[in-house]
Amino acid sequence: MKNIHIHKIAIFFTIIYFVISISLMFFTYPHEDALILFRYVENFSSSGEIVFNINGEKTEGATDFLWFLILSIFNFLGLNVVFSSILINSISLFFIINSLQQFFLKKENFFSIITIILILLNIGPIIGSSLFGFSSIFFIFLGFNCYLSAINKKLISWTIFSILFCLTRPEGVFIFLPTIFITYFLCSHEDKFRFYKSFFIITVTGIFYFIWRYLYFDSLLPLPLIVKSIGGETSIIRMAAIGTTILNSFLLSLIIVIFYSFLKNFKKIFINNNIILLFLITVFCWIIFLFLLSRGVLTQNIYDRYFATFYFFIFIVFLYSLKYMHNFEKIIVLLIVVVTSIDSSNITTRLLTNNDRILSNPTYHIFKIYKNTNGWSDHPLIRIGKTLRQEKLTIILTEAGAIPYLSKKSIIYDIIGLNSNIFSKRPVNCKDISNISPDIIEIDVGPLNWNSDKPRPEHLVRFDWSSFSKSKKYSDCGFHPKSEIFEDFLHQKEVKLIKRHKQTKMNNENNMTTLTAPNNILICLLKNENYERIFTNKKSDQIYFVKKDKNFDFLNNSCNISKSGYFEDLIRINN
Image (spheres, one colour):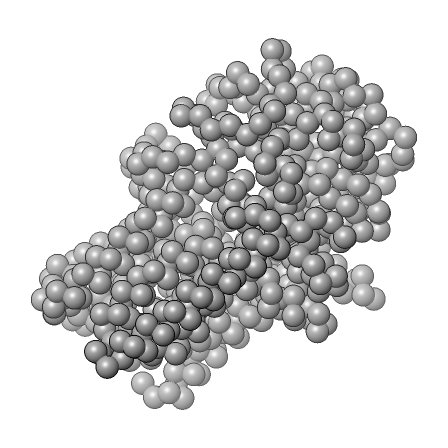
């Protein structure tokens, strides 16, 4: 296919992605975790410091460093952070589609090309997550070019994209490793010196970056990696559980096709021992990557975004395997993959476990947002964040995205630890509440809503959110006396304050900071007379304690705020 047609197809689908991204933000908001990074971006562009609070401690709560840096530059130049994220992902998608056509789809007919690109666009972990503000497409664009440069022996390009890829997200360092072996084995004897020079530049850059970030943040690892390791565990069983979770019908169909093609065309694909060795090294590195990923607590995993690179890797190997199939085989395979792409349900989990709940993550599910009367933009966190927009308060909380981003004037203490050096090292305690003296304390009690399917651990309290949300005694949205709420729904006999983060061999997930932080807050506020009222909205399982010497009746306004999207609110504010 001629280059002009390649560009036209890429431009066409890029425009579609860009238009959908923009229009979607008129109906909803970026995801909670994306809003955390956007707060860092706006703070950095205005203050020049990487901080969660202006003039606060330096914290590395934004793990997408290069993504954060580029967005900050755009924001400093006057571009809105959400628009910038859409723009960068759109440009990245254009180059990905271009490269796919150039390196994998040259001999395919027009119908096959369009079908394959549509399949790509329907991969939720890649495209769906990017629509909500994440760097998935940008990150994959850099990684894809890192691998393409290695395979095509373009050492300068490999050096540049390797550095950029590793600087974007921490896992980039591990995913990049196979390209070292690929580049080394494929480059000629004459180019070996250039390879060593490139590898030296990449290594030195990585060392300088690590030293800089350690001196700047005084921490070996980003805070999210530290916090998500609390409550995680290292085991083959846990990795198997993660494997059954991500092996949905779509991914499973790709893997089956790959096995079929590779077995049938083994001698054509693996023409020498070096190719076999490189393939095994690459697969081994990806298995280790998934193993390491399974060790942590995978919260806020919208559209399975943590596995976006793995999905893309399997997708690329699938495209490579198509090259060795006959036309009739391709037609059958594409029909099967289209069907499984539309389904994308958790078939492996349903077959191998007792869990019969159907979960599905294709991108096209986002179109429900356009007609949904509820959704993320109608979530109480967004609603309350809007009511706090003009307030200058001190807030302790467990949900560090929407409320901190929308209440830009407030000082925020993230007791989960994702954006706090202190609480990433130890749980919040009663003395912290006294010293900080927050105006509002928000906690998510949903994780403490233990039941027969999820028995209460001995060291944690139980907050019976299920009963509260159904109770007619309490209004759906508004203030309630703390004493009555605690009397009716808090069960805390023989539970003590958790003083340190623990690692246990059994049920280590019960030590997650999302459990210990709200647990300690509830215990501390049992006898704390400074917080006698609780605000709730039964649409979500967060509760808000308010200080008694101030008037917080304005929170009632959040009960009646109509649903509106990010760009709609932005236009209204600017006008």
